[in-house]
Length: 532
Image (cartoon, rainbow, N blue to C red; front, side, top):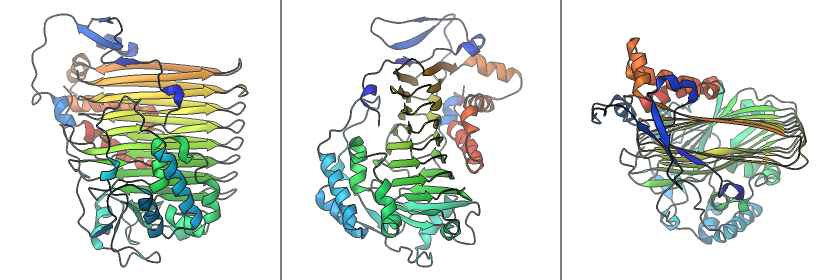
């Protein structure tokens, strides 16, 4: 979550301000600002436009494609009683057969959580969350034993087959190791033995706590301590499963590693924990995906991700976030409240976040990097697409502490329907971080007349030697642009796809090949039928 410096930043709200680079494609318009009104509005000159109904508007038709991952799997599950108290925390730890030090970590985190109040400073608007109405642990009754899938409920395996994540040995992906998590438990980790032969540990966080306690104890909570924020404290107390990866010195992980998170139970929140450690001169690339059924009731997803890089190590973390976003009227959907942070602790280390955010009713997250080691490098590439009644308050933080550290931020926000898309960023260069460098680019695109895009950049620089560059633009897909394409025989939907593709190219080029086709299909699915 953001630091106190982000609680009251300067910002603006842009509804239809054109990008100067495409000014010639817009009709003449006048911009005016009311006193004390931060909303920039475009006043159209010329004759009034004809009224276009929602059925006639191809943009709106494009946005109304069904969510194909919204099915619910029918398998037997064990769930603990609803409610959140110390007994809940103890029960989760007992069910997972954790050592005493892990229970102590959870109980201390729960006491910290009780001392905190839910933050209210984001742009997101939602009713109070009743944490006592949630279930904090749910698992399939038939679980794999000793790494075998023979006893797993076939309906569970069928679920991941339908999601494109086959787990059986005959069908599983050959170039990607996958940790499959459903509700509160990891049901399988593929290629675990093959990775172990190279010295790479990749397993569920639950297995790691039992099998590699010293490693987990050394790094758990080191980058995101329980007291960091309200939801980090909650996660630290009740987290159920997630992934752990340790790459030893002088090792390049021989394949991509990945976790696929799936929520199935309607009454259960998901609170996974991911911990990735790259030792000296090692490299690893991690992929993350997620989906959920189409329930008409909101569900909470509050995760924590910690990355730790030693000298000359590199971690590349890529996410395609596709949680259920709710229906056209804003009913249902996932509240995606996540803390993601990496620490470049060693000299010349490198962390890269790349994310494509298309799902969730509400998204609230800031994947960040602490640049501690000299000459370390952090980068953040993001596309956030919102439609209907979705809300997103997302961005990044780059904290420069070491000398000659560098960071790059490229953020693309696309707002359609009645959605609200906010970029909130912090670039902080501490005193003593000599010759630090940052470049930030924040672009917003609006589709339709009801969407909103906000930006809140905060820049804090101490000392004379750092250099910071920041550029931003806001543009709108309008009738003139679409007419230009139509004159050349390109229909509305293909025209929007072309404009979106060009707008997001800088981010899409950073995604691994495993995600390239998925992202292309996902963006077309999200936008198909909504341009006019």
